[in-house]
Amino acid sequence: MSVCQLHADGSETLVADRVALQEHDGLFGVEKGDWNAYKEYQSMKQELEDSELNREAQLLYGNESRCGIYQLKGSAETRDIRFMDVRSGRK
Image (cartoon, rainbow, N blue to C red; front, top):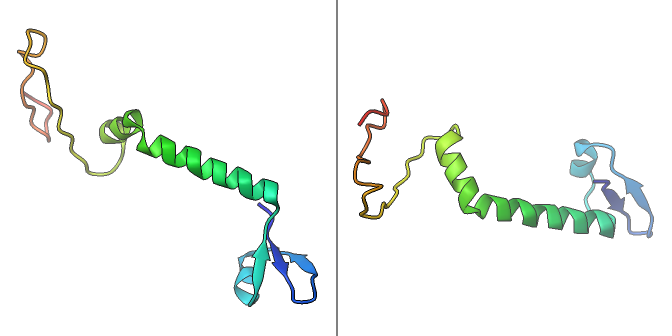
């Protein structure tokens, strides 16, 4: 996203790098279309992070230490499912 320094005289300068961001003691601006696209991206990203499928995928395949608790219905299909050892994956 292109970021511009906004100056007191009404002019603007395109920011070339992070150093310019730190050196400017004033306002910055971005194009409205870029800003709206960024907000939509952030919204979609948050929606994905909050989704049940993503949370389960992070639990199963993520690289953070996590644990999950599943509640199983008492039925013939789940009768033989037991607790598993976290380290070995054995019943």
